Length: 134
Image (cartoon, rainbow, N blue to C red; front, side, top):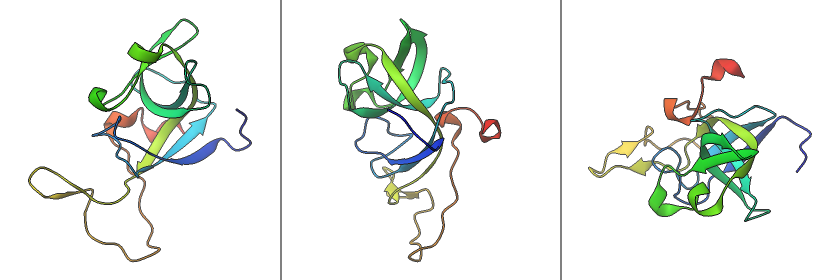
């Protein structure tokens, strides 16, 4: 996999990284950054070539990276698929549609936006290191 630009915008598909990332969220990733434990990354497992996944780095192992899902009940990770190759590190994300908590409260400012209105990039502490390192 080769990229000309260091940044790539991807869309989350699935629930394996909830509650950090939800289906439909958009994630800005940066290629060329060295991942660290705790980072959210765009990766590919050797046992599933061609399938790019969003996971959290646990540790470096056997020339690759041991990854986990924030929602272990909803996705495969290194305990099932072994080590992975990390392609990029997440730097921030934009929530997709507003989410509802168990009490029915909208999370991420659940007000409707005007079509075309810009959204600020969110930086939760759980997604990785601080944006100052960009």
